[in-house]
Image (cartoon, rainbow, N blue to C red; front, side, top):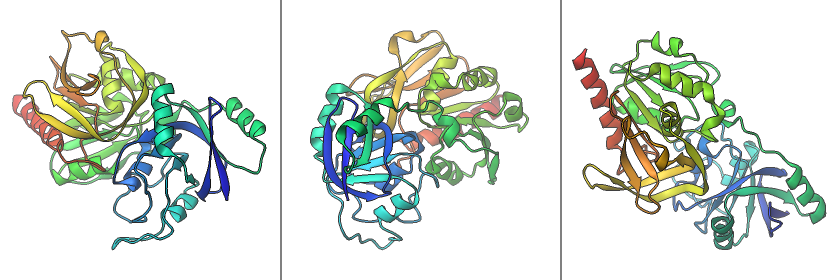
Length: 359
């Protein structure tokens, strides 16, 4: 079926549809990842977004049972240069098109994704739609202009009820802001006893669980849209160790009177070089975020910048000077992506050990 990809500035790309045959609207972004399309599509950071893959062939290994980052992906659509007719892999369960159809995610192939990426780089992230080409362009474009994108992304992706993932080690509470399964996997490898809580859980409910540490997960959207979580962090920090990832870093910064901003086209991919200031160590990192912490808003007496992005100088890590708390903007769980930053989970374990020893 012929489909159109229409951008908010009036640009139209023609291609072939696959996946769910739906008209969808979302914020268009691009990912530079060369592998791991299943993890990317099921990453809740992409809630409400249309993902453009810059790697030319997407779908050649199908979908498998092991590489989900969530069971209910929340992206709206995907854009690819080439979608292969056949897929082959020893873990293959279903084709990418079949998976997208089951999850109501639209796909469009045959797009010049390099030209599209350069347009997003020049113009910034914008609204877009994937629609059937049977309609008139004028009507389809008017629908896109009239569409209002939702701002309650965290509410859409967070768990509605607490649930456990039992372990025998440290008692860790996870605030689900758009949790990636691989974060739980890494903590489980370190024998942590995990309790996943909804984003709107009260600070008292979290502290009643007597956790050794708290994880603020990755997630989608503008951190300023969930002020209750910011206040909750203020109530908890200083009482137990805190580890924040992605959106968790932005919320932690806001809780300490910093500011955040929306990036022009964000960081989405697996090849972002990040430097640790204390050691000079450079790691290649996986990232998927559209907001970041403003450098000139930091209270240097309260927060310390631990990591920064070599490409654009943006803040990639923070540490509280008085409380046991640190955050990273990148995805340390490496799913998909390089394994350079898995040591961050060990640092969280060491922080909880040190806090226990100090009591």
